[in-house]
Image (cartoon, rainbow, N blue to C red; front, side, top):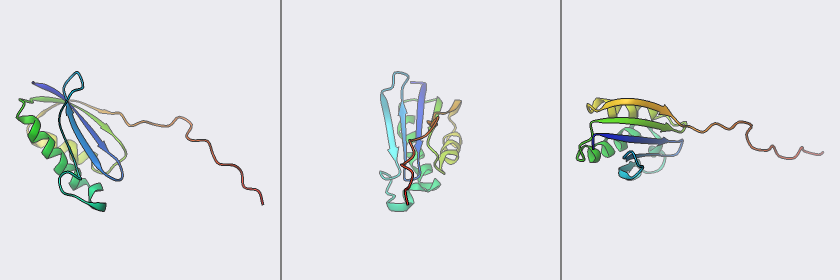
Length: 114
């Protein structure tokens, strides 16, 4: 396997990194909680970096050379996760932001009557 897809979900509470092939089959995954972080430390950029390094090391055994990165969520560790992939010598073909954006948001609550 030479080409894989990295999906980074980094929200305000935790980070999940999954590595899939082109068909969507998960090859390896890691999260901040599975790397030993608990509580509020799961939402730090360092926790997402450690989780990314863990997922990359599992995927390197499969022969990964180049990746496409899909980043989702408003978390603080998105850029650090991408930098850690790049620092391990893996070629990055594409970085795509797939964070969902609400068009009009939720319906507001009833107007308060006094």
